[in-house]
Length: 107
Length: 122
Image 1 (tube, rainbow over the protein chains, first blue to last red):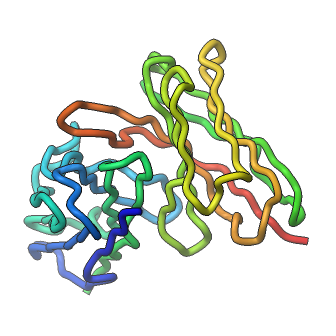
Image 2 (image 1 turned 90 degrees about the horizontal axis):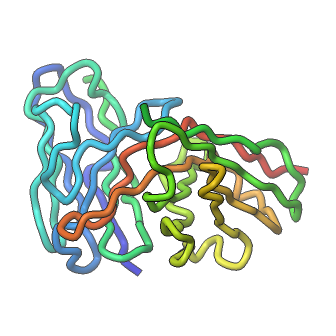
């Protein structure tokens, strides 16, 4: 089975900061990597699919890159509504493993 | 608009059974793969199971294989998860999610329900 890791597990940042979250797969997953945002008490929300495609309605400050085993989610200028937990998820096989999450909170 | 509404959660004793439902609206349910994802209290997301549009293809996470059964009724726009032999570690919010598939994008979950809480405790 493909294992997913994320780093860091948490980070503190200020409004306006550029934030980068890394996701690594235990084997090559091509570009089959999705990113979700989750705020406390709510369902996850799709941000990025296929490593770099922005889901409709998601602000352009969110971007994704990578292929193979290493991927990044970048928030170019952190906004107050972006404080949340972010999860990566692979879809290389139909065992859709999620990463452990990265919590972004206010510095 | 797309809407997914889960139901059926509750308090159940270890070893018990439960059937979760997810009612879909706002899209052609029969054209989409669907999935269940769960989240234990204070923990991350765990993918549980998926089912193809025609129910031909089904898969489960190793942690639930043999105890959980996913099914769907396209005539009723509904997705189900039958859970048997419940354990304390199955305590979680269970979400249903709509899957989109593309040849170059593979699968991603673009709409999620609000979740239903399953608590396993004596």
